[in-house]
Amino acid sequence: MASMFRDMLRLPATLLEYSNIQLTTPDAVVGATPKDVVWTYRKTTLYRYRSNRRTHPVPILLTFALINRPDIFDLRPGNSFVEFLLAEGFDVYLVDWGYADEEDADTGLEDYALTYLPRAVREVRRSSGAEEITLIGWCIGAALSGMYLSVTPDAPVRNWVPLTMPFDASNSTYEAMLGNEELDTDWLEQHAAYLPGAYVDTVNKLLKPVPNYIGTPLRLFRQVQDGTADKASYQPMAKWVADNPNFAMRAFRQWVTWVYKENRLATGRIRLRGHRVDLSRIQQSILVVTASRDHIAPRDGTLPLLDVLTSPDVDHLDGVGGHIGLMAGSRAKGDIWPRIRDWLEPRSQDRRSD
Amino acid sequence: MAEASGNNADRPYRQYLDDVLAAASPGLEEVVNSKAFGHMLSQTAGNLVALHRLGNDALDLVIRNARLAGRSDVTSLHRQLSRNEDKLEMVLESVERLEDELAEERRRNAALVEEAAERDAAAPARPARRTSRSTGAASRSTTGDADQEK
Image (cartoon, rainbow over all chains, first blue to last red; front, top):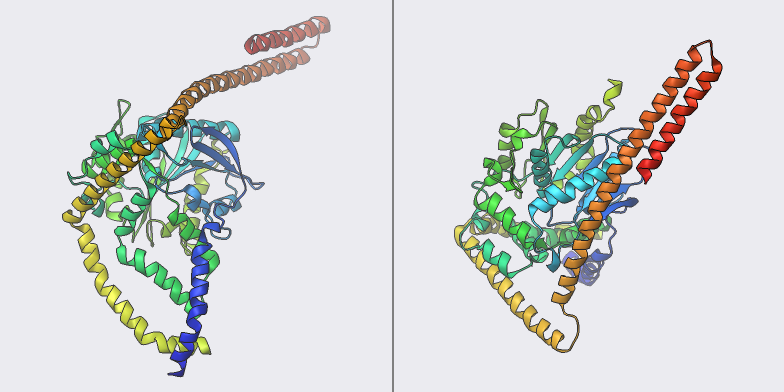
């Protein structure tokens, strides 16, 4: 009884701390690793991270999805994939698609995959002096890089690492949500310039409504009650989750129609500027990374990619975690990142020295 | 100590809440997975887009009638800027390609000069002609570079 009374007295302090964490989340610093702008084109920016430890001659270009910010690669000091790669001696670049707005209504997947990305690759090669690069794509970023590689057989890319890439959407939750005829993407494209980022985020969160809308805030509240809340790790992730760029409507229409309504990516029926996107044509060294608890790009939907690929050097890395948690969770640093490094290292050496 | 006792006092309530959420979670996910929910979501998207468009059109009309630049003007200006940027990017691509070719040409010429110098150094006789030939190669290389730069 006494302890309950004590808890009631502590409640205002708990509420105060909880609301302070929530209210100051937008001020959290994400993407803090120093970087320089190498190239810009429309809203796309290519960054190169500063480093004096570059030892591998093949630079890495990171690409992320269109519906969240690429800061997840560099979430916070001490838990940053970029920081890890730099410490391992890699030369790291990041392509940021920016925030789409009304003027980007006619930006389609072919623009991202066949204009912006190849130009970013060109600038990576020019600024690094490397002949070939490694492409690491995450989620839609993996699909875009796959599209680029499949229609550009002579792309100067030595290694391709698709992280939790949506591939075969048949029987997925997204197919049920977006694959119905009620969703008239052609009408949407004609009448709107973009799908608001907040709407896309809501739909994504609805896939796991209880954990996303109740579980996460409740867990934080309990941690505050128990005095175990880790503000430094909670806030960057919460800020990143809430930062949702708009989805340019043309790109949205293509993505939903091709991937979720007609499953064209898995069946090789996408055409970009007249070129068929046939992932079996990719001959780079490939590391397919899947996450066991991924509900955005379920593991079972990515595994058929391994049957399609014909490259002589294909590996599969199956990690424990969710779509984002796999690469940005607290365990990533000790588990999945070193495994990716182990795969990349021998494939990032100068071929002339072989 | 106070925290520990607080935890103990809370425990039944927390457990109860966890049980409720654990029971509700699969049911809600089943709802989300259903076709009916997909239909509702799609219609919501359509309604939101329609409302957004109506609101924007009305606001834009007000702003333009006040002789101010509206969002559609900004958008059209942005598109014109993008077209200019496209052209600049194409020029940049050409310049970079020419730079690469020039660098390659210079490398090739430097290698030729070096090769000629080594050959001349290896030959014991006729030092005067050797000098002249090596200078000639160097001047040819310079002329070639200057042409490229033009």
